[in-house]
Image (cartoon, rainbow, N blue to C red):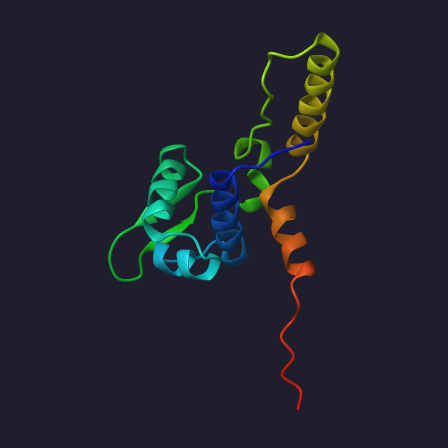
Length: 131
């Protein structure tokens, strides 16, 4: 079983928001409000993403946070790591967890942020303004 922690989820949600508007920027407060992410926590995540070169930020009017490169060039495996379970288990179960982790790593390596954003757009209900 693949387990994604809350930090991974928040990181991916913020990046999906930025992928949807690429190459434009959004304020961190807007990202936090749209995704229900605590603002202070998101600020720390965005600073981490800036240090790794995934996002760029600019202060002041017209500033904000934007992806540093096209969503098609950001692999999900850069953002989320397959995690192993506790190694204090029988060898057969250890082997099973290794197989699952390897499968997850291969699946994540084949996905990019643009694809994840497309999945989200397709699964989100479109606004209907008909009267």
